[in-house]
Length: 435
Ligand SMILES: Cc1ncc(COP(=O)(O)O)c(C=O)c1O
Image 1: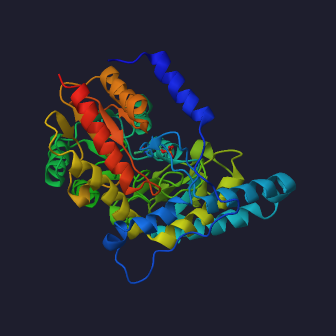
Image 2 (image 1 turned 180 degrees about the vertical axis):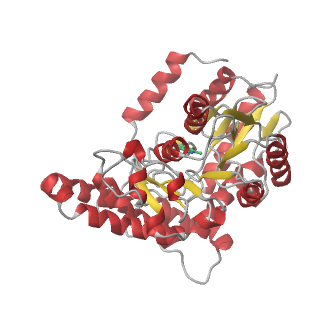
């Protein structure tokens, strides 16, 4: 039975306003440290440990949240740090911003760079991944009329818009390719290398490390190497991967990259950064002819105006939380949760799982499609059905050449019993929408 939009919207609204939240500690909890001597895979399945981690989050008890791909809910230590920083900012006002803020922010920048395995001079803060992508794509200086740029159907929409804009702005051709479905690492590498060979005028390639539609993690280093061999520069979109997957920025093999800090790093909304490898700075324009910083300072590649300084100053609390668990443990747990529901629904005959099981190709995010349901409207209805009938929040995503899908994204506060609940709900949903 299709549900009326009004009923669903009303249902979501009611859940949002009347939602009780999980019992929250009245004081911030210290980040939970991964116990020494236990490997990530062993720890990934220790529900007692993850219940402790889940206590760090204040989440609605009205529904099961498997839609954690928009941004990351902050753990309690980060929420309290953010409050303290907001209070301090309000108390000191512009005095803070005009005296110590720049030096404090620069220490935060140093901390991020160290964790990412790069130099402080190679990164600059942005308000998130989108701004960083826009500045790199819009600012890339080496394009000449008649050149081409390339992206894929599963790249982030804002990045695709910015790439399309280059047609008018730089007079280049825009080549769009489709990621193969089903995707395997080799099929993806072959698709990119074939496309690069077919389009020798391509000078700039956008690669999304973990996309926001199916969550597929690209074999990005190999593709970037193939691009480099052909004289093609790569912008790596690691907005969704840094913090979800365990890697260093230099592992990506790209001279240009971007990260969000408010997704899997758990920092407050409004935090991210761009990366430009040393020696490549002059291939990206200053942002809107910035004059605040010298042209050889990467900070001149971002000009955001007045921003939420409290969010920036809270990033270290988020990195503390991340590092207490460790990137490898987070990655193992998120993959475990993803595998847990996927393996329980493998036998459903009208269900396609769009994200490969290969551990190198996935993290938390995985999408599914019910056979015969490929439109936006159908997949919106399926996500609504999951919410209305099972109180499980997921989201429709579009982009794949073969049609829309529903994205499922557990988080660090997701417990194994949520994945069982979801598997049961999906079985009912698949039956309900069987064509
Ligand atoms: C793959 C990808 N790239 C970039 C972005 C943009 O990041 P932000 O939300 O930090 O602007 C997103 C956001 O969801 C994303 O999924």
